[in-house]
Image (cartoon, rainbow, N blue to C red):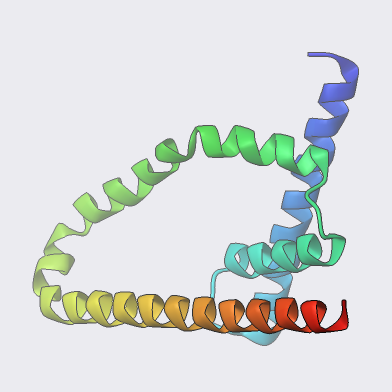
Length: 131
């Protein structure tokens, strides 16, 4: 790796870690029951939306992390095995919670998609009328 690529990697990691750190601070300050990294990802999403592009250094690091995403599921799988008894004791409420949350996620995704399509259609219609 060249020095330029090293600097890009460091800058990309710095952006990701600063967003995660700010998310952790927000959770500690507010006491919301959401993991800090989730808030950090939302902050990163807002940052990218404001920039209207993905900086090259953030893209480089993100693509590298995504390449090995499957390995990040190993600790979760181990946690499931460690807590198998607890899962067996609460299988019904967990199943209900998973089904309800999945349904809500699908419903909200479809609603947002329909809203975005309607807004896009009205934007195109307004452009055609003004042209």
